[in-house]
Image (tube, rainbow, N blue to C red; front, side, top):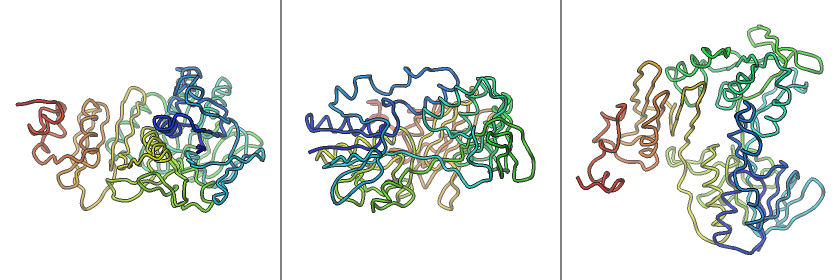
Length: 417
């Protein structure tokens, strides 16, 4: 038995650790286009801000591969999968056989067609190499335009601001973080950004990137021209599923997997941001590009690859971010409008709390500013607890386990009265 894993991020780590709990001996080969030991991708913004160095970004100890008997082939790209021959081909022409294969290729930046692409100083921001390029160039930069006001774009904006670079963020929607925040929550976050000196332009987009070989500015859809010396495209990330699709594996938005993380191809599994997997809140399959979810999916895949049946029960999309001292937590169906959903919301200054209910169960939440109770609410979403007896307290600043019915308190905390 030999295991091959394509990708070297958190899903791969979860799979390796699960496999080795079951199978201590058989060969594991990890192949990654990136040349780095496994690192924490969420830290690339802190790296660019100068708050951490590369040595602090390691996600596991330096001897992780050695301890787990992993052959790590780094800096090499898998160009094809031969499902019938159970082998993968690398960009150097080498072929590697597998008995069980895991595709954990993550996401890739979405770059829409626009005039001026291909110039120097146009970046994306999802990998360490992206941060390294921007880090080396930062002392020369005076003004950067970031296209997209989602999590990635705003963290890049904050990092560059800390480096003394002027930043303008251009967003097509009418607010920042529009996929997860409603108008009230988005305004609090946007105000924090603007008060710090970030220029935010909403309901507009970049129609053309100006300049010769290098970027000199952008032209917006409304005709406005902004001078700048670099552009970061941070519109979004899509599953990096082309390898699977080209191999005949079923792909919708991402690689379609079942609750064992098995793809449509025998002996081939997938995990992490590349997948479209079970989502129990929506009742269907969904792409959920969340770091903890990727680890859990990798772990489930690893167990099943090693012959131990494990089921993935679905994930709750949870985002946690802090921008210029304002913490934000979103969970589940945080910004969905539907006839079967009820929204409870409360704003107090720069604090905002929102809970989304379907019947008597919490299915979504947003916390901005005061996030102390976010973990409790997220637990209610994950466990689908009936909140009919405590719904009037859900938005209270001091909402807690004391508000739970006694039987639920006993279950969670061992309380007897």
